[in-house]
Structures are given as structure tokens and as C-alpha cells.
Image (cartoon, rainbow, N blue to C red):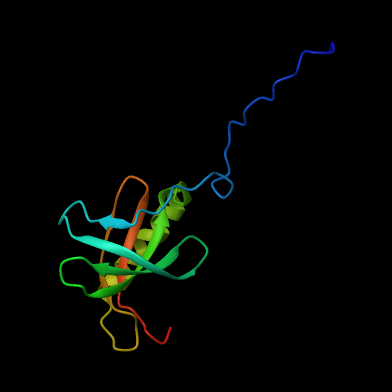
Length: 121
């Protein structure tokens, strides 16, 4: 290679979702089916795929926990299935000792799960 000619790196065909830049979670979360709007509040914690925030229904001012999962983390079929199964199980439960499920929705970039807020974590 002669001086002055830089060799360009080939872009990788496979991008690891954990190293790919994540989209920014919006301040206002909108359920496209119902047009219900939630304001994203304080950060509560994170897990393997999701981040949890306080979210406030902008009409009723009711506060929930919002679990936000980037779709970029749900690329493989078993990851999508795991998310669907989690939602189905949570939807089927009604027990005072289990965090309450209030619904879910998605946009182009994220899946949002609306849960009962647990004040004492």
C-alpha cells in the first residue's frame, strides 16, 4: 500500500444489537390505537432488554410504570416470542401480590408495557 492512500474498512454485514446505537425514548409516549398519551417521567431501573420509567396518563394524571423495550433488541424470533409470552402471562394474571398489567402498545422503535407502579419498589 502506498503512502497517502488509506485503506477503507469494509462495513460489517452483521451488526450486534447491543453495540448498535439505540433510538432515544420519546418524552411523550403515544398508543397509536387509542391515541392515549403518557408523559415519561423519572427513571426507575433497567433489566436485560428494558428500561422502566414512571409514566403519567396525560388525561387522567394516573401514574404507572412503563417498561420500554427497544425493537432493535427483539430481532430474533425467540426474543419476539419471549416478549409476546411475557405480555400474555402478565395479561392473564390478577393477583394482589403480582404487579398489575394495564396494557401495552408499540411504535416503530419500541414496545411499551404499562404496569402498576410499585411505590416501594
